[in-house]
Picture: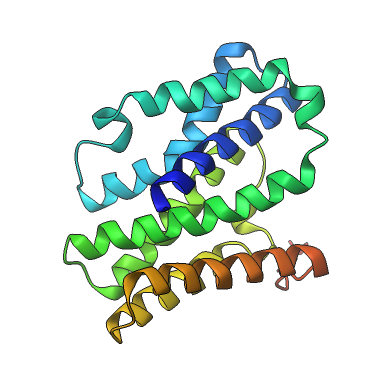
Length: 202
């Protein structure tokens, strides 16, 4: 189940990145690059920090074709894709949760501590978007007031905590996904946000 959702999330992230590239007037090469970097960047950052090689897209080059192709395909249907704003918000939330669970699982399989596994999940879930925003010359969503990274942290802690207490894996995955999606979508619908720090002094 997670693998299918993972592939769907990769495509969704690449397509949303393509729209961001279009708003920055990038050429087709830039669109494909931004799509792949956004979709695969979080996992690549995680693997580099954890010393895990080869990187996912090096071991499976088809992921580059999938994400780059999804981004380029978005160019052809951008007018229709742009209308699916709510769908993309849902898919982005799914991607955040799925990437987080995968990042936690990989760190756990390496025998790393719970704290490192939670951070690994957050990096996997969030840092592709950070790279996208940096390349688009925007303040990354992770550093703004939206409840985003905190959802990833909550999902990771719930997932690893439940496993530690002996809850079956499949039940834990479903519970973490429901909780993560519920929190993220509720935050979007109700406009929940953290306080921001503003300083205009000398």
